[in-house]
Image 1: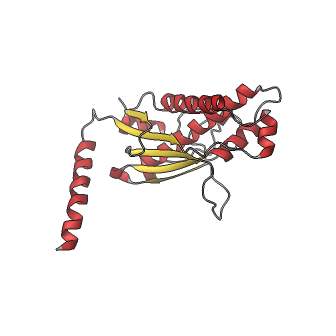
Image 2: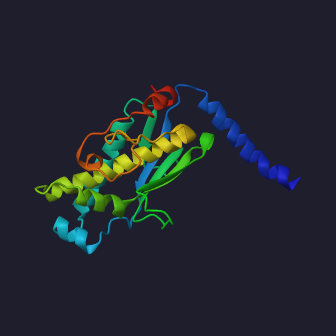
Image 3: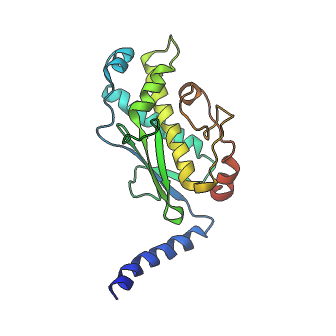
Length: 207
């Protein structure tokens, strides 16, 4: 009896999500936010930047990363918000928990009709953006590169959440959102586009 009562709300919620998902006009929410302690960088990085990130730098990084997400999903029924209870969600952390394998810039768990959740590693993305900065890049250009890189890692992670097992990495096109690594200059200072996941995203989430 206790088990049945415990299951009832979950089953009901699951049914509501499935029913809503069948309604093609529905716009889904993608929650994207920064944790408050995300922004400290190692000494070598601050030296390259000419000092620690300022409040103005941090605000620019946030704005640019959100613009990148809006651009990545411009043709889809996805509204990016700062809601931490959104259907799909990605938070920007200072660093991701250590793994036995090589560090990742992002990670996600796809939950199917219940959405998904993931994170982005601020320090790893920032350090890589600094490493790939052109020799004559200004501080402003590098800060913008950090914001661009974070937004694009988040777009990649949202792709995993939206498509689940159907999301396929594109190991050939270094300028694609689906490329499996942010260790490339175009992640921060170039233009990206959808390749393998593009048709699937439009089929599932197109306007």
